[in-house]
Image 1 (cartoon, rainbow, N blue to C red):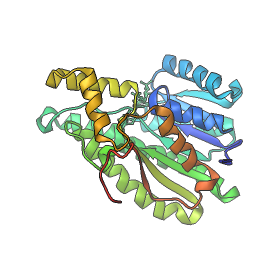
Image 2: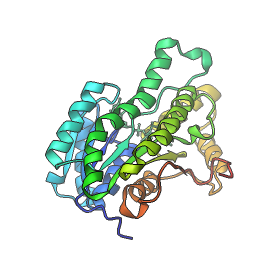
Image 3: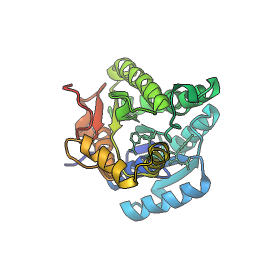
Image 4: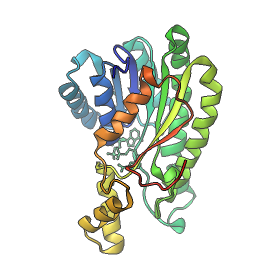
Length: 270
Ligand SMILES: NC(=O)c1ccc[n+]([C@@H]2O[C@H](COP(=O)([O-])OP(=O)(O)OC[C@H]3O[C@@H](n4cnc5c(N)ncnc54)[C@H](OP(=O)(O)O)[C@@H]3O)[C@@H](O)[C@H]2O)c1
């Protein structure tokens, strides 16, 4: 299927590893110019090489921008640089790292605030600063997309992931509301909810569970796999394929949805 992404400009947040990196590769492979961001210049430089090498994109089509998405001023600057150098912006993927694990008493007010800044406010601020460019793109040829990375925790809370469970629910409410406001302009807004997917973040979760329960890595992963209808975990590329589809032209009539890419882990009829 031709996703109609040739020469579209994408901004991919949290893209030096894991799901963000996989999404950047998928979009570059489909012909997008891609701006990737994360906090570390070194990790970004390595990720940029991976995007170029894996997607076959020429170096001028992949730019790396250091940006901590919890800092609004850095988002504003990165978005301006990306749109300025790429000649506008058609696609935004919001993403960041995952918050620390813990039970309700494990976080003080600052801990809760930081969790919401990382996964909720960053999403809102990325959208706010991308929207002027996306409105222009939608007005010129009707192709403008926002895709947000959330989590299956948004549908089915994961024990010890209080911060994630709380922030993702907020993102879902924001996304649905935004889809109504910008829909008339032709901008679609969708969320993608990863299930247990093999990334650095998941390795941290495994280590955390091992420390809490004494289980082995194999036992933890087997438990996750057993919970999914497909009886396995995902690879980042499987998540990225859903992002690329939602970013593409054929998804023009899909907005306001929350798409789990979890192998059937969340047990909801709708
Ligand atoms: N993997 C899963 O199974 C899974 C399941 C459900 C939900 N999720 C969620 O999906 C998101 C991505 O997860 P992942 O598995 O891809 O994690 P990951 O491999 O740890 O990657 C996280 C990425 O975000 C960047 N990042 C972290 N904090 C940032 C910040 N403040 N500003 C900008 N970039 C930042 C990191 O780069 P730098 O360190 O260079 O900044 C890295 O590129 C997370 O929110 C995670 O909780 C993941």
